[in-house]
Image (cartoon, rainbow, N blue to C red; front, top):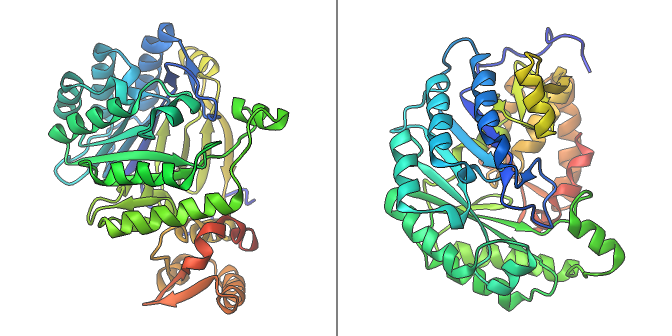
Length: 385
C-alpha cells in the first residue's frame, strides 16, 4: 500500500453516510455482525457517543443518501431515537425531496407512531429485516416475528413511505424450492418497492457455523441453492422488479441509491461501532466492540481501530470489482478515465479471457456479467484483486 495519497486521483467529498446501531433483541443464529443483545443500558451512552463522533466533522456536511443500519435501529426507545435522528439531521443535512434517507426496521417495532416519528424527522425509506413470511422458517432463523406480523408491518410502513424494502433469505436448512417460491409470491403481492435476496451463509462466530460443524444442521445443496437464486430472478422479474445488482431487485426508480455509492466506488462517511468509511482514499473501521467504542468516545479517544490507505492500483481494481456487482456492469470509458493506466491494461487482459469463457460480455460501452456468471460471481473477482 502507498504511504500517501499523492498518486490517487482527486477524490470528491462524501455525500453518503452510514450509521451503525448495534442493538438487537437477541442475536440470530446466522448473524456475525457487530451487534449486542439485551443492552438497553448502553443505548443512551450510544446516542451520546454517536453525537460526539458526528461533531468531529466540525461543520455540517450535506448528504444525498443516509443509511441507518444494524443491528436494529428501531429498538431504540422513541425519545432516544428522536435525539439520534435530530443529531444526524444537524450534522448530515439532507434534502428529503431529492435525497434518500433509509432506516432498517424490525417488523415487530413498526407502528403508526414509529412511522410518524421517522417521517417527521426526514426518513423517507424503510428497509424491513423480514427474512421470510413462513413461521417455521422464521423460527429456524431465530427471528422474533412471524409471517403475519411482517405482512402487517409492510402494510403499515407503506402508508407512510413510498419506498419500502424487504430482505429475504433462502437456503435455510430443510427449505425446499416450493417454500422459497411461497416467500417470493407473498412478497410480490404486498406493497413493496425493493427486495434483497440472500443465500444463507455460515460465518465463523455465528451459532449456525458451530452447529454446521457438529452436524446438528445440514446445509442445502449447492444445486438447490442455485435453483433458488434463479427462481428469485425469474419470479421477481416477471412481477416487474428490475434485477439491478447481484442480490437486489427493485421496481423502476426504486433502487437503493445509498448502496450504489459502494458499488460505484464513491466515498462515504460512517459512524458507530464497527462502521467502515471511505474518505480521501482511506478506509477506516471503528472498533467492532460496542463497549470499547463507547469507552473510546467517552474518554476523548478516536474510535478508529483500523486504517488502510489505498494506492491507485488497489483503488482501480476495487472500483472495477465492486462495480461489476451491478447488472449493468462498469462503464469502461469512465473507469479508463479515472483508473491507473497499467492496472486498466491488466484488467483488460483478464476481461478478454472471461469474455472468451462466457462469464463476461460487452454491452453499450459497459462490461458486465452474463447470466451464467451470476451464481458464481464471487469466484471471478480474485483474478482482478
